Image 1 (cartoon, helix red, strand yellow):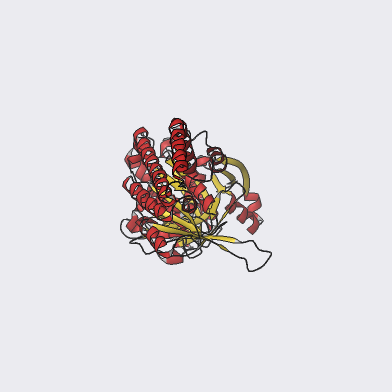
Image 2 (cartoon, helix red, strand yellow; image 1 turned 135 degrees about the horizontal axis):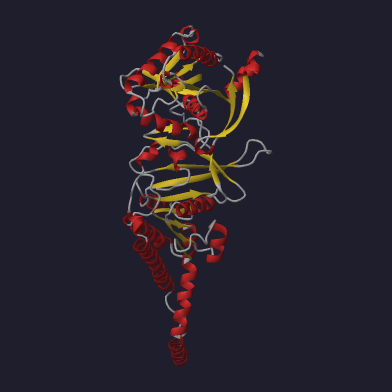
Length: 510
């Protein structure tokens, strides 16, 4: 179900909302109700849905100009209905068809009045208004229902609900109940809204009906309206504390049956193109980094995330499973400096398994006996099969120092090797800085994973045998730290990696 800003307004309660629902959107004039409906309607079309927009004050030309962002590309996927214009058209056709009959009746009526001396002031005004109202609203109800049935017939995939985030549905906007109350009798409008809500629920349609506050109907009628929809969305305008500040618009969702809602007001604003953005309350905290979220968040299994951390969390879940990710508060996120190494050519099918194991053991022994490895206590080691990743949580220089030591020891080892070239060991190394998160492995031992390690791996993948590549942030930190590194670390170039990201890479002389 697509509702603009619902993930911000509801937070974790979004997972308790059904696949379709009918809402009444209330608020004073100028609070953004119509623009919210535009966002709702265009968003549904962009997500592959079918839209029905009902308005008694817009012409279809005005609707296309002001409410559809790309109406030509939406051809056949929406229907605009103006009940008042439709009624006028039907009345005109009826008058043309019955013109002669009406004239004949009028002449007979006038003749009878003249002969009897009794003036006929016309039909009962109340009965005529009631019949006119009932006929018009019944026709509108029938037209909406027929349009929904036709849409399901033309686009059968609209009935398929694949997931909670499947937006390929039918959406209806009634803008507004207030206008209908001006045109028709109040009690008939209430009945119409009740009947329409029932039809939409039966057809599994998501809809928004707007109502300007304060309403022109009595309290009992308002309660009746509230009872026929799933929930209420309220908007309001808040005056600034200082004259120099602009007015703010706020929105909240209340009164969804069976769900306890936070009921908090969320700020929203719109740009010159009437695109809405919602300001995230600072009460939401990212489940991964434990920091407040001030943007539109993303959710996964009742957890809330920054957009960047959402993708990272899904990768962690894929690698370790949901039950093995540690939720240890803010301490679960760390910033470190990473050494990522693998053995070049280890996957060569001509290389025996025994020879592969031998090379891995030799590299492991060289690394574990290096001073840069032994002397630093705050580090994490992540075996990778053909190499390893080592994270230093405090020592900025340690990854490069370790690279230098390992290369020197391998040069000595390879020089001593007699026989074929396949016995020699070639390595490539990538160094990077970044964030990592504490996770549990299959044995419930704590380990690390995250963007810092992933970046070091990406940098290593750019290198050839004998290379030590360093990503920009770590390289510049080293150069700034000590003049010694200005001669040791040199700019290599810009390299494109996965997803089109371009990295500024340095090479280390070892």
